[in-house]
View 1 (cartoon, rainbow, N blue to C red):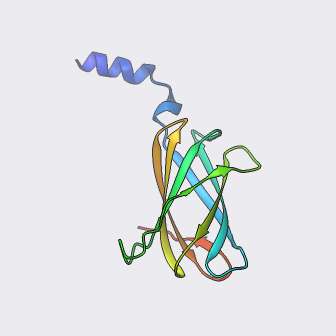
View 2: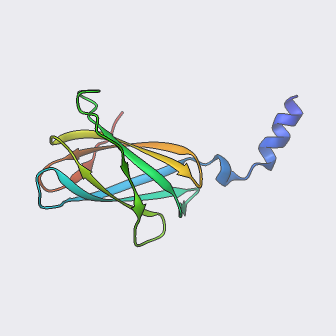
View 3: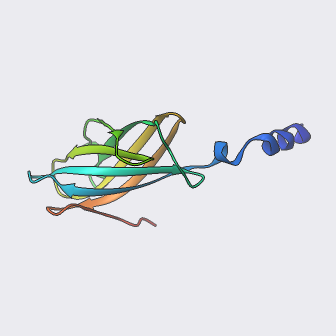
Length: 125
């Protein structure tokens, strides 16, 4: 059995077991707490093109109290870029669960602090 598992591991390409990486840039849209965001996705250092994705915003400090309806991402201008318009209900730190359903199934959670200017990444331990 160990030989079979080892054999399969050797045959699986590295891209198939690679995790999706994501980063995001957001700018305030000029209206209170509405942000235009660009999410960049990559796997094995290659942009993820043709992705189907949903972004679920939730405030980690107040779970379930500030959990918003998922927003569908749409293709951006560059490879691996997706556009999302977030309409949040208060400033502060938000966890953004990015769920991919195609071409691969994966999930990435981004933590960003939002204010009147835009958003910045929050490093979590």
